[in-house]
Image (tube, rainbow, N blue to C red):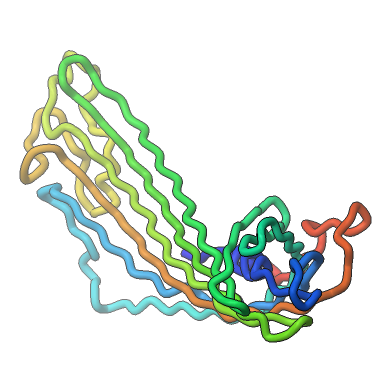
Length: 241
């Protein structure tokens, strides 16, 4: 799971580097950044009795993944509010930042998205699907001089999917015999209304992926105004998809 380098670069812009040598850094910057693959770990857990996580051929196969991509290049505009505050505008994204010392700015943004879907019967049966996503981004930007910036962007993300369902229920009352929980995810047969399919309490499957990534940034002042004749969101170059 990979966080967009654009967002990283964007925040980096807000660094508040000062082209005017003491006043706010107003204007358009060109940024360059590599786009490395994130380091991710995944886990899955369940209390289904017949779960078989990993499969019969575990250990015989090795997953191979390689990622090599050209630099992302894009324009972004930085505007200053109060003396120690700045904001970077990149396309539809607005990223706030604050000054750490005379030459260093830190931008932090935590994005979360949580969803719960399910249904419950008045006889006691229930099913629930939960999705939780969180991306924590920290940009540290250093002003090297009036014309360019350096820095790093660090990303930590977490994505959780969890399904919960009654272990047994009255199918005559509900009209449901086969459970809705995706038991195939853990190699198990369907959760059935009249069988004790789980080790204890409510049946559940939980899958989680955590990723972290760090990227270096370089920004160059362009002198462009970023007015109506120069649309920031239309000026981005990335690798071919």
